[in-house]
Length: 103
Image (cartoon, rainbow, N blue to C red):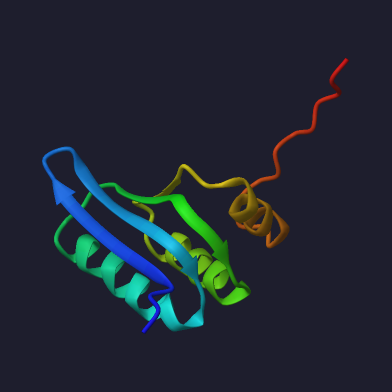
């Protein structure tokens, strides 16, 4: 069996974090939702969704992240990779980066 994505929740004295590792598609959306729900139910004031190791995401994954951001005000996206950021920007989930003209 090939693991498409690992969801690694962590809660300690410094806060709560969920590390996404691999690819986020429809088959992983429920597991991600449950990880965030558990941290929120345990009283996490801030939950970082670390996307530094997330290499690919489908539209279903983007939709799940959008739903979670809407439901949990304490959820923050961190270290979003360029390809994932491009999809989230295209979907209107995160703002587009301003383009600058380089000399």
